[in-house]
Image (cartoon, rainbow, N blue to C red; front, side, top):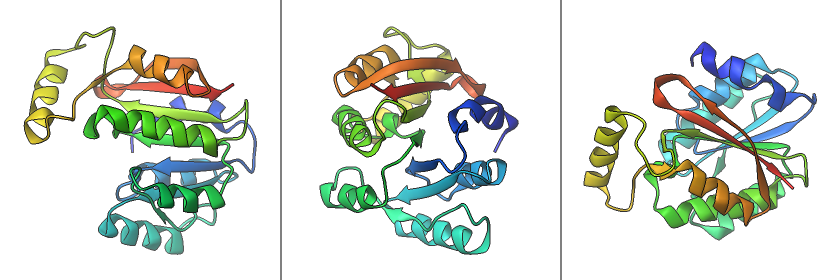
Length: 193
C-alpha cells in the first residue's frame, strides 16, 4: 500500500473507536494497511470470493486486534447485506476499485445499502478508483483501460464521477470532497445527510 493512502485518509478517522467497513476487500492489502495505521479504529473486511475470505480470515487471526474477521458479501445478494448490517452500524465505508467492474445498476445497489449501513449525518462512504470526469476520459491510459474491461464484460466500464455524485444525492448522501490520487485514480468522499 502506498503512502498516498495514509495521507489521504486521517481526517476520516477523527473519532477513535470508529467502526469502518471495507467492501470488496480482495486479499486485504488496503484494509491491513489502514488497520496498521489507525490502531484505534475497528475495520471489518468483506468479499464475495472464498480465496479472499480465507486470506482475510488469516490476516484477522494473525495481525492487528482492530482487524475483524471478514464477512462474505456479494453486493447483489440482499441476504448478505443483512448479515453485514447486523455487524453495524458503521461510521464509514471504503470501496476501492469496484464500481467500474460491476454493471452501472450495481453502483446504485452499493450506494443504497451503504446509506442504510451508515450512522446518520456523520457516516462516510469513500469510493476510490478511475473515473470519467464530466463524461470525459482523463487520460489515454484510462480510455485503453475502459476498452479492456468492456471487452471482458460490456456492462463494465469507467463511471462518470459527477453522475455517481448525483445518484448518491438521491440516496441520502452529499459530496464532501473529491481528491485526485496516484496513478490517475480519484477518491470520492460522500457523507450521509
